[in-house]
Length: 108
Image 1 (cartoon, helix red, strand yellow):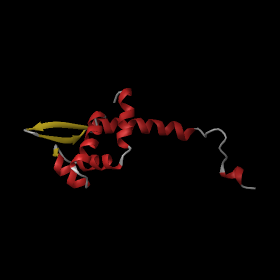
Image 2 (tube, helix red, strand yellow):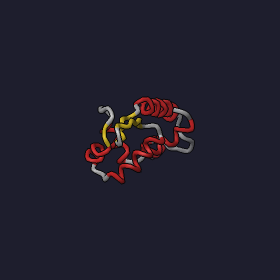
Image 3 (cartoon, one colour):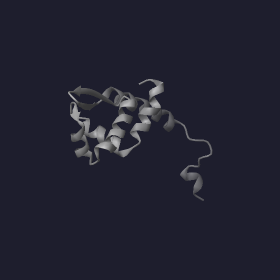
Image 4 (cartoon, one colour):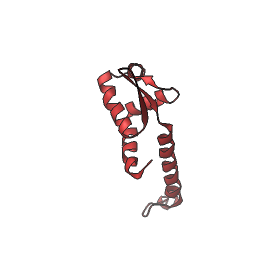
C-alpha cells in the first residue's frame, strides 16, 4: 500500500456498509453486484457508490463478465493496512502521553 493510498484505505474502511461488503467478499471469489447488495441489505445504487470507494482505495478487484462487473476483496491491501496499524500499536503503548495521570496519582 503506497503512502498516497493509506488515507483512502482507512477512509473507505470507516463506513460500516463498506466493511460489511468486504466481510461478505472475504471468502468468495468474484461476486455479482446483485448478490453483494442482497447480502448486505442495500440497494444497487447505494452499493454502487460504496463499491466505487472500495475500488478507488484498491480494496476490491474487479472483472467484467459480459455486461456485468464482479468483485472480490483485495486481501493484499487489507493485510498491509493491518500491518501498518500493528506497527503503530507498539509505539502508542510504550509511551505514556504527557500530562496523563495514572490511577495511583488520582487516589488520595
